Length: 199
Length: 199
Image (cartoon, rainbow over all chains, first blue to last red; front, side, top):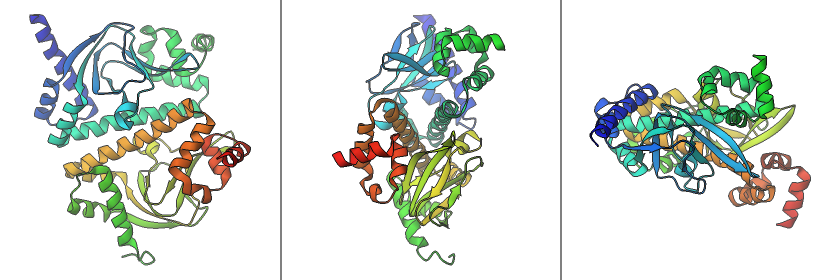
């Protein structure tokens, strides 16, 4: 399809902009090479595209849409991460530890991603200093948010967690079912409604 | 050479050995340049290396001794990690988020560390591609350890966590007060004693 070809170029340009925001001093030619190696994938709303118990072999860049990361414990789904446009994701537990993933990754909207295989990524890391730096900076960023989430759960009250969420993700309220926000915050939907009414 | 640290070159050699094992393709001259920036400090048993509430940008390598990392919640100390000789630790929460650290770092034996500002490490990452590679591997390794711990607490039974701990840290049983180990495993001291008797 002709249209699809121009589309992917548009998405790759978007990807380059997103990555430059994460790591501003990237070498532009090296970034272009990375972008050209990505593959387009469309994920339908509700589809789970990385399953628990799987091994990770790709890194995904969200161009459009939204992804929820969740795990199941005692038959309950716990939402641990919500990612929108500009987000980078991988089955990071599997990618880093070599063990199986314990989370599911589900599109909450029709979602467009570009993906790169881990092998391609490793080749680019080896070849280019600035791409390897990008890799480190992305890991640092997601490690930091993972720690922040753990910190919030440990030390903040439900109300404080809610307020933090509103400050950082106000736009998500109109895009996402409240049950996922409640699960992300570790509170019941009733508590969430109460907190929203209070604001 | 600083007085009182006659073994500093031995410590630095151990450190470069450790970092080379993480980075795999490090250059010996670059590594020597880096480890010479690590300075030795002594802490007595029970002395605090770094307290919760502080901002810090320092990374540490334990040359001798043992460090306990814990946080305080509702007046209770919760032990998160033990860092023994030839391991590194850093207040990654403070370094990566820029916020005050929430953990305490306590020497639980007489301890000698080599320490460096993370910004100095980053300057080496920027200067040498091999160092960037090592830095990425290092942060990935630590992210991995953090995720694994989260996974263990979520999905493993107390008994499974205990046997993993024994497998990886048998030596610590004789070096660490049992109440800290129980706290690390999230169990009471009575349960820990029962498990020890069983194995």
